[in-house]
Image 1 (cartoon, rainbow, N blue to C red):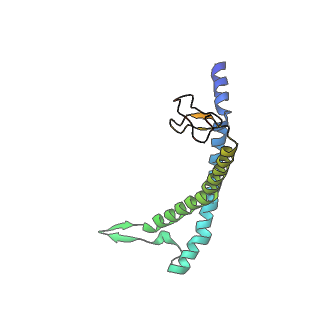
Image 2: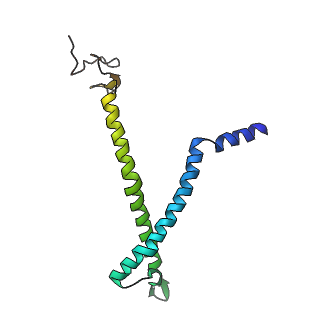
Length: 141
């Protein structure tokens, strides 16, 4: 029983589990902010343009069945707003950061890929240790 509890403790305290828990909490808070943004700013802005403030009341009827497409519009606007916010405020900056780090690593790298087999070899190597091909740009004298 003690080993089971120890295993559970190790599982819960692993970095990725804690990171995931933090991400869920931050995601829920971020969702609340975006929902408020849609409800308090975007919906009234669209209402000013199109004349409807509450999309949830928009419906149409076919053969006695009522379709509430306004609720769908509200959910769609909320989703697109969340997706845009995540993309522009999380994905784009992280991609730029990763690209900058990669550029910095390439300049400082002690190795490069072989021109033939793409294995990592030292910069000063005249031949690849894996495929024995001569490497361009290195003095082969």
